[in-house]
Length: 252
Image (tube, rainbow, N blue to C red):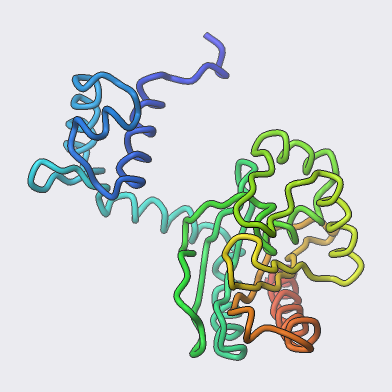
């Protein structure tokens, strides 16, 4: 059997886990309806995942268990990038007062692997492990701008260019023009492209070949991030943090 053929049972289990996350916990019938599977099949998967301690059951509702936290923490901490970048992200958040983020690309999508809040940060939906389309964020655009064009085309073909807000860039050529501008100025911007009322400045973390490995950013309210603060002050602070991370990665 070809290794490219997915194991259906495993695939169904993961669909059910994702459904529980989206539903914030649910009963058997609700999950079955959500994933369009027979109730008996969903029940068997839920029982097995609970027995293996990946789910918990409370009042006939199933929830994702803390065992996934152990796996997620391992997936993050095994990366040298995370251990080196974490203190720099914390310092950036405190220095700017905003919401600092670290993102990687995995399976053609952006994944937040660390966030830190400064004293003036507003509450956002971003958190470690959150996955978002790359083109909708300054972080994702910073990463794509420093990848080979054929890889970026593959990302777009795989994930599309979904419109999240009125400002999301959804045209392929317009996006490549944006990448050129990012390379020329050294940083990417997000002007209400994923969250209305929010702006973001991001800088790629690149290897010696100039390929993006990740990106670091600061997010804040549009009314606070404007003028020189948006075009010069914060970009310079984010650039300094990205440079520090790159140097530490090179010599650690």
